[in-house]
Length: 268
Image (cartoon, rainbow, N blue to C red; front, side, top):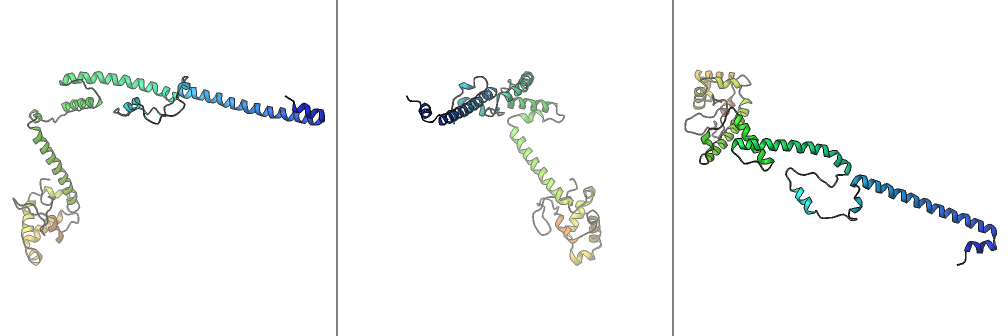
């Protein structure tokens, strides 16, 4: 094969030197580029070994788009397991002491839960949910107010649950009634012994001009008015005092259904 530089050199020696210098520069540039790429590749290998471990080269060259069976099993754990996707070698090394301490705590808790289960006559808890139930039972056993033993009878439990639901509903309605009453009346009104009688006379007695002409009605109005937040009687207070008629659901003066308020419930 003919050397082009030698051919040009035979024809023009000066031209031959320029070509040789250009060839050296091209070779040097290519060598520098190669060395730079080599340095980047070596640095990338070091980062891969630091992040993924010394066996990083055994990882598949492409990403797996579907979850493996092992990952799916981890996803179903409760409490939820660690997400391994962003977990690097450095992070895993930092988590190792924490996980070790947690495992020791869990082992100690397991031993205590097993001992507690034996004391309560229950099976050893297979998981954290059952262990929490045991802890709740232990708290109930130490509570000052405990349910009577016969309440735990399977034949009685439905009635206990029904009674509880009724109590919860009554407590809610009582709180709502108390909030509504506190906007009109002072809390001290519930200490008034004759309150039911006064409310009965007002709601069943004369109103309008007849009420103004009745000394007894005016006296009852002054008593109720003294216990209002405004400190005086107003005509719209009739609407806040449900009728205490026995055997009849409380209704307001205009016939609408109403929850008990402080005005007519001295026991609240």
